[in-house]
Structures are given as C-alpha cells and as structure tokens.
Amino acid sequence: MTPARHALHWRARRHAQLDAAHCTFETRMETTEGLALYVETRFLADHPDLDPEAATRQTPRGWSYRSGAALAHLLERTGTSWPAEVLAGRALADLLTGQVGAPRPAAPHPDLRGAAQAAADGHDADLSARLAAFHAQPGSTLHLSSPGGLRLSGFDPMNLYPLGDGALLHARHVRLRGPGADLLTVGHPVLTRGPDLFDVHEVTLRGLPAPTVHGGRWRIRTPTLTVNLPAETVRSTPDGWSVRLD
Image (cartoon, rainbow, N blue to C red; front, side, top):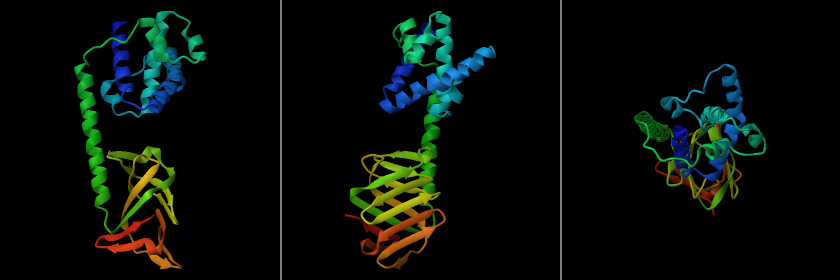
C-alpha cells in the first residue's frame, strides 16, 4: 500500500493549496460520481484511467470521477466494510488513510512532473491569448469605476478566468448593478477588478458601438450587451468613455 500512501501525500499537498469549498466539492464528487464509475469499472473488470497527461486537461469534476473510483478500488482490496462507512458520511480518502496509514512523502514521478509543468505552461498561454484577444477588440472602450463596489448578481463560472491581482475575465456572461447603473452581457467579454469575485470596483468593456443618450440615460444595447448608466456620470476619453459611480 506504499503507492497509495504516496498518492495520498500528493493529494494532501494539492488540497492544502485549495480553498476549503474546492476541497469539499472534490470530496463530494468522488463519493457520488466516483462511486458510480467504480461500480461501472468493477462490472467491466476494468480500472479508472489515471493517465497523468490526460489528468491535467480534465475539469475538477472529470478528475473526481476517476480519483473517486480509484479510491474505492483500493478500499475494496482492504476487505473492510467501507461501503457502510461511506453511507455514514465518511470521505473515501479519509477511509483509505485509516486503512493504509498516514500519507507518505515521495518524489513525484517524472511523468507527473512533466505533465504538471506542461499543464501550467498551457494554462498561462491560454490566459495570455484570451487577454490579448480582449484588448484587440475593435471599437470604443468603456472604463467604469465604483469605489463603493458594484453588486454581482449573475455570472457564468464555466467561462470565468482569474488573471491575478484581483482581475477577472468574464468571457461569456456577467450581470452587474450599481448606483443607477445596470450592465448585462451574454456573449460579450468583460474585464473586472476588485478584492474578490463579488466585490467589483472596476470594469472594462471593449469593442463598443456608439451609445444613445435620452432622458438622462446613457445606453448601449446589442444582441450580446446591455449597458444602462446615468448620463451625467459619463465622460469622453481618447479611447471611448470613463464612468465613476459614487
């Protein structure tokens, strides 16, 4: 069971770098979807695919299918009544640790190290390309700031890209509201910045058409974008407009 202790060590190292909510999501997915795959692979007399290169390209949910099934297969070898423990609410990884002992440090396999580096490089390149494409959009730019913060009332978590230093690229959908302001996108990228996801202090939109101004409202409306602002807050700039909402 030494390899299992090595795997549990690296799992613990990875979880130490995640938020508690992320760890809980993975653990619960291993119990639900992972056990489903365990039943399937056991019936087929097969084992879950844990190829290191493929693993780095999977979503957390996709990985949980395979890691949960692998944990269950290892628990099966212990000959214990682990299914009853799972039904009582115990996590698969915790049960396996109880059977094989504390995680044991080990140097990562060269294949794993290489796959991890390739995944990190690919991730960085993808973010750089997305940010470059955002800034390359033709048309005018809107810079919006709100020291008090805008209220995030909707976003697409599957198309959200953290860029560091509080910057986030909402590639598909976001809904923001502030003092007399409303912004909605469905297919138009938005760059936001703030202390966290739900506290937005700055917004940048590119590739904008000319607005309409009527009844004290400054509006842009396209099939993918709606911007509705108090006209008195908008100022013209060399590249478009700037807005400050107090």
